[in-house]
Length: 410
Image (cartoon, rainbow, N blue to C red):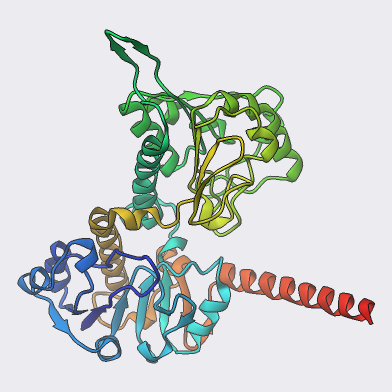
């Protein structure tokens, strides 16, 4: 059975879905790998390194893809970052990547039209058996680390306390918002660099995790109700009401203004990131202080974030909205992702009884069931179907408003 890996076409994406070190484990299951020439180059993996590990190097993007029974990727192949490269797929093919299916259900619907059986790794259930397949955790870990380095580079002062003959320099204060995987790594990295680190999360049960990596957990008076039932199934934070978020912001403001660096890492998978840092909260932050918004791609935790941009407000606060941070660490990010996707693919082979007939996956397997998005020419994932209906409803409402305004002008 042939597995294909293409060079990522999404703008700015430097990672690759498989690295040479995982190829032997696939070969043991009878899987041969063909890569589009140059697929791993930007992540530091040469065509020669793949050849030495047993892969075939192919030329002609569409030919490599269509020859394969299984297609692996990081992101859906998009022409110009917008249009799905439909010519790469064929009916009955298996496709595994991070589809971003909840945020872009229309793209998943177009993918269904090709007849492929697709799986979205970002929908992986948070259960013990799936830990080795959890791409959100492996990539977020790197994003949290990288965010602190970006802040340290931008900050016009040092992070650790320094005692010198010319005087003592106090340690910088870092506030991390959100104690998920990215947030915890940001806390640990800032602490290793010598900063004084505080962290806040709507889930009070993560206090011990924050403390275990060297942070002080912030408890907000008057925000207890906002903290209430804040954890959703699977351990992620869940969306909260506007009133609850307003109470958090009011209580958090004094901690934000005391910080030299704020790392915003509050994310709810599949939905817009919660807006935590408002313009009002940022008033009083010291000139030169830095905000790194890890939620920029999902709308941002900070009201002033511009995704993909870094700028300074008139008050002197630096706001960084990095996107796809794991790609900036493409070598190690690819290594981790390759381990995740290989574990998932071998799991699918295992639940198929060791045969190559992957289209007959058991529906009682939560890993396959919850990540499967399309099969037999249709969308089959309930969460993605619900997201598609929500998107269509929003489009209809927006269209109705446009027509109403047009009628008013006439």
